[in-house]
Length: 381
Image 1 (cartoon, rainbow, N blue to C red):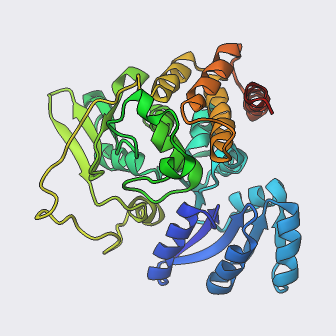
Image 2 (cartoon, rainbow, N blue to C red):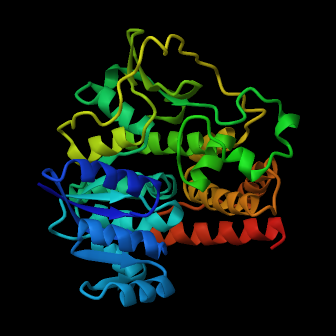
């Protein structure tokens, strides 16, 4: 039986992971749960899964939960979450905290040499090189949870790397696929949150609408699979059935396919190298008779270009990209920014940044802090 720690248990990935665990009580035991501030959801999870360890990032929320749950030590803040990330008795750490907040706990788990299911792509966007280096030192095993990276992981497992020519990550295209630039100038947050295929958290859904999420995934793939930027492509695939294509030097391809459901890559990460039965319904080929592919329009969705630029620039720039995006998306969701202005804010922040090489997490966080302040200044906060 695997002992599982879930960092970000009250979010979309965390809830899906607990659904998988609920279905296979003979295979998994929840050792620890960590969340930012969703006390009511976390309380219910504690009652059902009876973890030994719990951590809450927000001080006020932690105090509130301590009043409700008496028979359990509840750890507080980033320090508490990092303690869970390093638990010696944990067989796998599921890193599912959204945004830059997930970086330090993920890095701590890597330093400890843990097996980590990484759903927090921002960790690799911000500090991919550092995580890779630390992982080689500690012997940490990283299993991707993003559907596309899980797909690549499955396709290239056991392949000789010199035979791989290119990795293609697929994207549904989001709610504005096929639109002209002027048609999405004044879209509302509600329209942008209406994703046609995936049920996800708010930030990742907006990032999917701008294609920035796919840009982040390109950066993550670069570090996970040691592929240069020019050998990682993006295809719009509105059916979201094929999650990646791996192109080989002989002109052949391998694809990974399933109905779009995050429980599939989550279950694989939790159970690897085993597979669990009946996680998602099989594809109904009587209905799925057409699979489309398109090249993304980076004039309409320029955020994808910014991600490639940040990856090629290297150093502190990917961390700046992520931080500026996080601030801009938050401003859009709260009605302080138009949809097309998300790109403009990020571009301004990147243009103003003087790239520095990063050799520590502290330097990554300095770049992150600078970019947040600059983005807020550009927004007028």
